[in-house]
Image 1 (tube, one colour):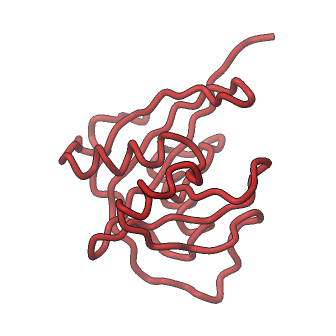
Image 2 (cartoon, one colour):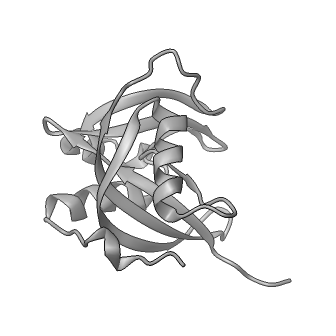
Length: 147
């Protein structure tokens, strides 16, 4: 069996001191995460983060920069993830659009609320991405090349 990490994308969106999250059903109970998901075949990372954000929040996402690339192994199932986190903004909310299966709701949460609920985050990557964003970390979108 060949080992392969899971390539995922995540949208980091901040408005008025609050961050866009989704509450989702997991095997460990409901957890909070950025709009995020797996890269699909024949899709760029940018296309993936735009699609995942729309599917999970009913917002259109405009990527503006790359926050970072995060490597993490899930402690419960040993799955390894490579997360490409993109900073951007949302617009064109479509409240009648059905959200992805397993998504309970969209939530706007301050960093303090996230810190106070760290145990309810889907992974350590969720809060780490917000902390990196708040520190000013960002890279141009051109740092990732799709051929």
